[in-house]
Image 1 (cartoon, rainbow, N blue to C red):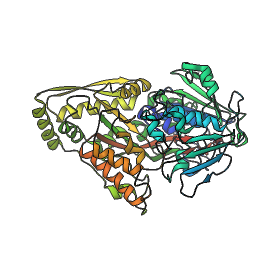
Image 2 (image 1 turned 90 degrees about the vertical axis):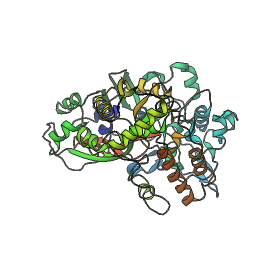
Image 3 (image 1 turned 90 degrees about the horizontal axis):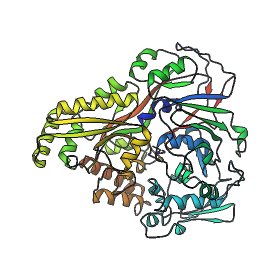
Image 4 (image 1 turned 45 degrees about the horizontal axis):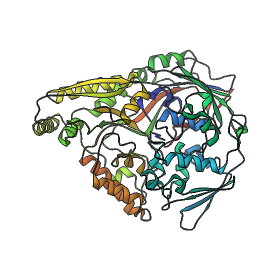
Amino acid sequence: MKKKFSLLLVLLLAVSTFLAACGGDKTDSKKEGAAGGSDKKDEQVLNLAVGSEIPSMDSALATDSVSFNVMNSVLEGLYRLGENDEAVLGMAEKEPEISEDGTKYTFTIRDAKWSNGDPVTAQDFVYGWQRVVDPKTASEYSYILADVKNASKIIDGKAKPEELGIKAEGDKTLVIELNQPVTYFKELLSFATFYPQNQKFIEEQGDQYGLEADTAVYNGPFVLSEWNHEQNFKLTKNKDYWDAETVKLEEVNFNVVKDTTTAVNLYETNKIDTVRLNSEFVDKYKDDENFNVMGEAAVYFLRLNEKNEVLANVNARKAFDSAYDKEGMVDVILNNGSVPAYYLVPKDFVSGPDGTEYRETAGEAYGSFDAEKAKEYWEKAKKELGIDKAELTLLNYDDENSSKIGEYFKEQLEQHLDGLTVNIKKQPFKQKLKLESDGDYDFSFAGWGPDYPDPMTFLDMFVTDGGHNQMAYSNKEFDKKIEQAKGELAGDPEKRWQAMVDAEKILFDDQAISPIYQRGASYLQRPYVKNLYRHTFGADNSFKWTYIEN
């Protein structure tokens, strides 16, 4: 995410208008901005723009930020994220009993219902988690359960799903066994891949499960009541939610909007309550009283698919990374609070055992824009490959901002890498994700937001054959560092932290990816929108506590 961002991470530029819509700060003042509109509203209805259709409503299969954001409103795990990213009780009635060694959790499931009237039980968690790790499900996010006993063996086909370290003792008691203590386990349990699933309902729906509003079942603060594909969808308050009295919003409406101009027009005509701005509109509205800028923990990068003969060459990959001006892109094309990234794990995200922020420990930068160095790398690559020319295709999203960024890459790479031709293949969000998952591309513009508060949420997606690797990258030493950080070093925080720092360095010694920028957002939001919580990891936002100030 929490991709997703599970994460996934899932978190992408194709959904740029949605991210701002769901990222507003709480505001106590009442203002009427230059963009028009009133500071009052008569009903508990929130109207938003979203950059994409929902790719999946199956929590075992979802990999992207749009799906995770919607699921966070209509489904609920043992915990959910509240204000300031605090893990607050969800389907868990109370805090669990934890064994002395920190590897066994015993939860009591509260009295709660699915939207079809079935009770939520401990068995729903057992079924959901077993379904994720079952190789037959082909869940790209199955690896996120690796801390649970036997999960990795099951994923690798060396054990049965029934051997997963989770069991129900009656309807109300859930016991979870871990391989080793996990300091962020409560936060991890708020992520969508750990949600319960209603076995009876899923089996009744078969391959139609989660494809329409009425072929999914819900246990969260809202239900998905309408879903007009590629046009709009609606969340309606779940009257049977266990904490329904806390939920003030009656509806949350989403319009699928792919360009900023249309989204701004919707905001100015009071059809949506918040809108993300691109460079052009930042300059127009920067003095508006309702203008906001925020930093985020999502990082965008180029996936360099080593299935491609050219990009299998390390000098070619280094040439790509050196051949474009990240600072120029951020300043001119984005101009929204984003900053150039020369790293994978973002700044101002998490701190180590000694309290030092990760980037201070790991260093600020791997590489830089250097046209001469790019030329040297490229000439070496061409000589090693025995070629004079190369033609590669950039896989891109089909929204307005991504299109501008794609054209920028084409211009910069062709200008600085002699003999290179870059084509651009723009695809709808869901189709782009599929092409990446299938490895059916040369290089792609991608992004990742953290699923939980630890560097591992960025690093482990690049292990050999990992579900989110998607670019045929493999380095045994990198894999070893990740395995150590997840296993034998779990009880030694300082050594574990250093193993992750070392792993990131290996990733860039190989130039497995080319980082571009750490996302920021500039947006307008009506002051009557209150308590719209924005999260650093997992789902981008929570509507459970949001209300409209009448």
